[in-house]
Length: 75
View 1 (cartoon, one colour):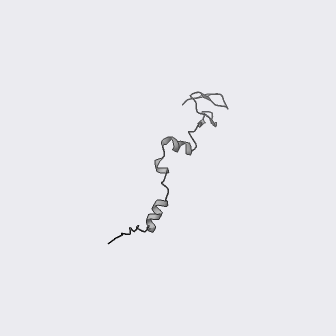
View 2 (cartoon, rainbow, N blue to C red):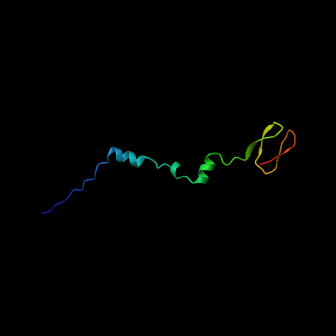
View 3 (cartoon, one colour):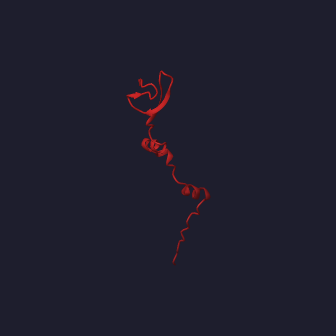
C-alpha cells in the first residue's frame, strides 16, 4: 500500500503580508554623523552683537572684528 502525504503550506495572513512588506525604519538607526549631515551640517556662521549696537553675522572664529566700528569681539 502506497501512502502519500500532501504537505500543505500555511496561507499567508494579511497582517503577515503587511509586516513583510514594511521597510525597516532607518531614522532610528542613523549614526550621529548621518543626523548632522541630514540637518544641514554644522553652522559655520554666528550672529555677533557689538557694543556699538551693530549686529552682524560672521564666520565662527576666535578673532572677529565689527564691520561697523572695527572693535574686536570677545567670545
